[in-house]
Image 1 (cartoon, rainbow, N blue to C red):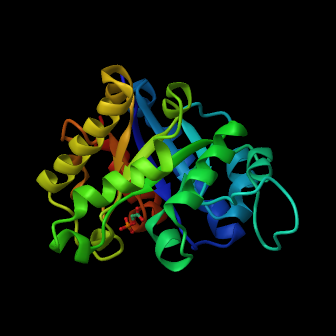
Image 2: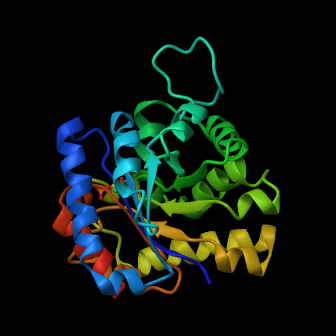
Length: 258
Ligand code: PGA
């Protein structure tokens, strides 16, 4: 059975002390919630800025349901790339996951499908698990090219992987028009794309892998709409931005699974 995952992407928010406090708050709320602990299939991921990875990994280490993710990594393993962070550096902090291809990285930092394929490879080679993001802009949706667009993103960045590596991925669908805008995809729009992504995986890797791939929804998911979104058969949780910055909101979204 595939996992349900609620992942919080803090983006460029929280200083070291603010972020440490937020992780402590989240962990306290989780540790005091026996119902969440009983949900074996439920997993929680926190993706703070790089400076908080090590501290966050230390704070969550006794809770097996919680893992830490980096928000990005570089394509190369080491060398003269001033300001970049390598996968080995991320791994050394105790993080287990890395978000690759977030729409903000694609838009503001011009990350291409080819570059993201390299990031996926370098992450897997170093035993860090990718949370791979894909999704369309409003213009692409309005032109009705969203299915083709997502297919191309997935084909060019992921479909070179062998089965064994593909199985390690989490995929996140992010309708760019719903990110940070307060607009959410309707439950039907989310389900339609998630089912489509799963059908692409099925075509390439077969039923078993498709059924076991966790596909998260990202885009203004909050305590008010999480239940409806997560109730869809192909939506396996969320990649939460703004609402993951408040411990209570984040926990309420997690509680959707109880
Ligand atoms: P948001 O971000 O929840 O703030 O819209 C979601 C995302 O970036 O995936």
